[in-house]
Amino acid sequence: MHYRRASLAEAVCQEVPILEGPEFDVRLEHPDGGVLRELYHMGDDGGCSEVVWAPDGRFLAVLTSHVANISIIDVPWALRPPQVSNSHWFVREFQFSTESIRKNAARLTFTSTVEIEFELCEYSLPKTQADGGQIQCSQPACKQRMWIPSPLVAGAPP
Image 1 (cartoon, rainbow, N blue to C red):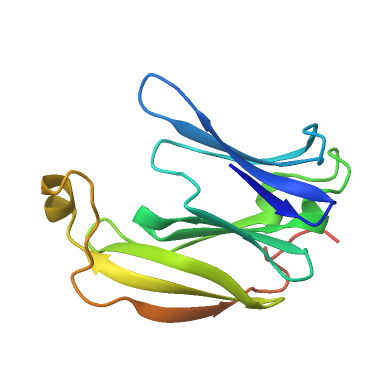
Image 2 (cartoon, one colour):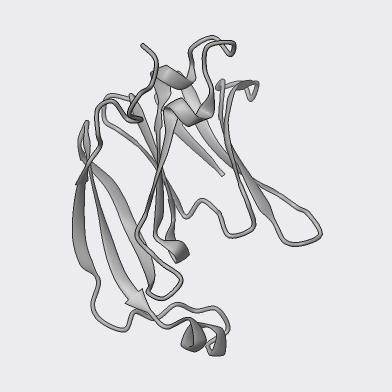
């Protein structure tokens, strides 16, 4: 999947087939398709349900709906020279689901350059499995808002 941000870069989430189940690579590409920067890799519980850019292009948010996980990427940090950048300084994950309380997230959007909004609801894993993987919220979804911390990762070098 390609998610374009102006003419500067595209965010790409690519499924990587492996025997145990698909994994996913998230990267930035030039508009011509050349890789600009590898951002991070997700295991078989990952996926890119929604990918959205902040209005100013500083942040990229990646939502994995079925586990209610949002990864925020600080794009200027990610585009620093590779010898200075390490993904743990420019990617931060926010997990809203646990092993005992399953949550689904949807409708991710930036409400400002530093705030995101999304809908969150609980669901039953056994019921979802019985329904062939179709997630049904056990209660209506609630809107949630979250400020993106600055710096994105505490202790990041200048």
